[in-house]
Image 1 (tube, rainbow, N blue to C red):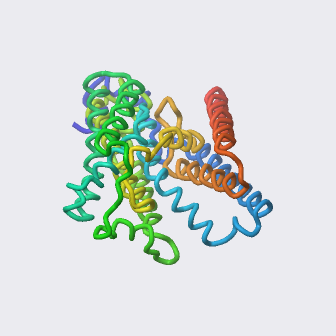
Image 2: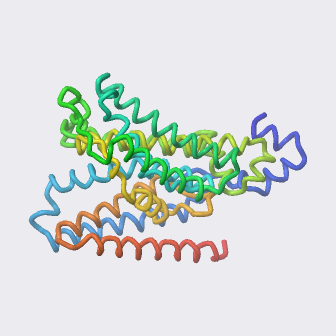
Image 3: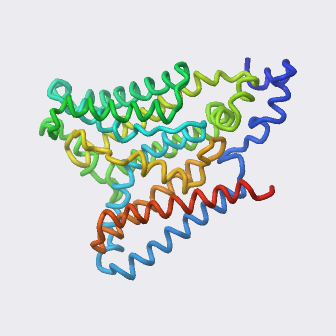
Length: 344
């Protein structure tokens, strides 16, 4: 039975369809006006940061090498952020993305896995990431665990397993598997292949969220799970798929981090979960679920990446970067709360 069938044939479902989150479902966050204004605001913020970069570091910031470096740096966290966007729109949260990426990179760079070549290494990273996401999804959807607790447990266990497998040592990608490294060194039209992977994931995420039934169901589940259930959506299965998608993105990010660093390490992805959540928040996705955009999340990633680049070029400490990010997150959440209280 489709959502439309449920809304027509069942009395309770019809009410849920008419009044619940399925009624106002419009693509790109179910609200084009506020979303467009937020996107323009983020573009303006990027322009302002670019001006600051040109003024403070005129010899380094506007160079093509630095700009390409910003995009390459954004690729890893950007792919993770796409998956995180789906999870948060669906009413959940995934704290394990950084640890899952580290575990996938370690598993893919073990001696046994590398002996099969780069294609198997990439497949292994994706399968490990997706598998970890499925475990989190099962705990949340069928085990009825709170997403915060389930993914926190996965964060700890995945990081610990990565440390056990690697014996806390950095595992190098072997020279015969240099096809992995070539994703970062080979350039097309001046951009490394990892940037194109990031772009492909972002475009696929946008299409999935805004042009498919899966995307509409994601908004519905995040906006009102009970109304979505009455409308004929299998909420538990959909929640499982959302976390599997997040894990898949972690696996792809592991391939990118292996390409950029030629290593697999249990230290990869430290605090990436916070960066991803922060990018999603300032991109306009509600922490309570039901509204959000992939475009906004990608712009959020670029804002934070440019900020990090400016801090590095100006020789500021990592602690200052964390303070700046914390302030930006706080302001974004306050603006969200104010927007929710405003009359519509």
